[in-house]
View 1 (cartoon, one colour):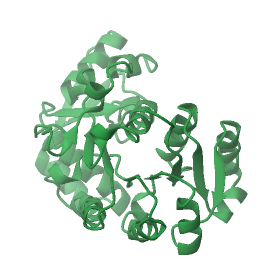
View 2: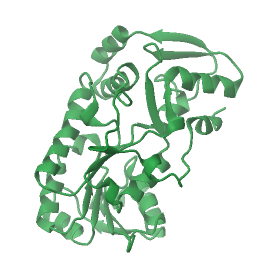
View 3: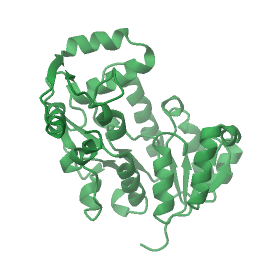
View 4: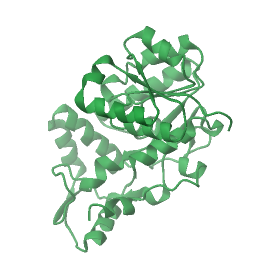
Length: 308
């Protein structure tokens, strides 16, 4: 494999970003984290940054709205990984411009970390969110930047602690609401595993200009199957309510914007089955568990044990 690539992570203090920084540093990559001046003064984020430094990561001051600082940071590395939040997805055109100017980047991984946006059939507002990510993909391709798109599907930490329940902070022990008929297959992956597979892919020629599409065999499960695993953990059958597609769409239309995005993504995944309703063709995609069989991922069954 030769020397490990130097990696710059943008959005490193965000939800998935912190896992990526940690995985990069632990895997022995010289790791750089782009940090805004004000982030260093944020009490919680400052603690996170101290942790990054203790792992050997280098903090670089700058932000995606300051072209000069961006180019300067990018010139120090081989790989750029963006994990910026939803509100900054479109602004990644600034990253594309800086990468083009720097001229040294061997691989760019834009902020994706969800369902494969080239294979979704979502309703609004998720439809627009996914289109924003797809537009960035097209811009990267048009700019001729070597890339890997990461479609990790669902974050285990978002869905599994409450077994998909939106109105509670703990896993249900009496009643559960299931979206649709509960039979469409979804994919949920532990955040640490997403990060490790992503870092493994950055120097791998098999993932160059491809989409890394996560389908760990034991984690491709329907809502009903996940509920069944949970019931076996607590030794109890839950009282089930099935929420129809029509009712879910009505809920999406009536929900405030942030919640409507979450619900419409759930519609895409759990009603349409958008995470699993296509084959991963070698022309566009690769599955990380097949590429790295030596890595052991956390199964949904194992993940749920901690809440029982």
